[in-house]
Length: 331
Image (cartoon, helix red, strand yellow):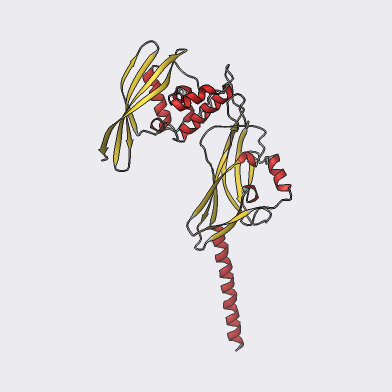
């Protein structure tokens, strides 16, 4: 009888240990991943004087993935700073200080509002945070970013750490003689400088930049003010604004163009393009381009005509039209 009791107790202990291991493995399978939301150049300064940019956020996309067979539940504070923490270090492992606003927020004895999130098995939940809300950046350089999510809010020690991502911060924007920041090449970090190239090369440069998602190069030979004023409503509003208001409108146009909110025909990425014809006088030019856009089952064919003006010996794109030429089946 004693042997049976000993055997039953042993089995119970083994089952308990196995259950603990399973639970531990399940918790370890809840992944917390981060990545920089935008692929662009980041600067140490949060504001760029005279640029019309009020804030230059460094957005971090965070994703929680439940790879366990059971639902994963956690508390997400309305102010995400009470559910997540960020640790940013230099290459010499020096930790960057928290932002003053974050310190005040966390040391203030106030009620934390939250909602409970349930992530089903094999599903994910994502949100975006601005690193500047967490960290005070004082010097440019290269940094390693890591975050942690606290399922029971940050006042509880239980957490899930993320992967590491690299962040490069450049010095403050370099401004030109007119006070407007100069564009930087994201690939090389060099200042982008216009070249006195012919109109067809200007258009090819812009389209190639879009194919490579290089927005700084895309805007180098494009006049956003002229593009904005193509719309009658925006034109009336533009001329009623002061200088600061006009700069804000131009920045809004650039932002909306990048997000395909306006002028989606020019911001869409072509699979290939072929310049058909270039005509120009001393100060005006038109460039006709055949562009192809590959879809899953067919290829959309369009003919673009870009209008350029010569300013200070540089050809600048100020307008465009597009005509659909039909489709062709993919091979």
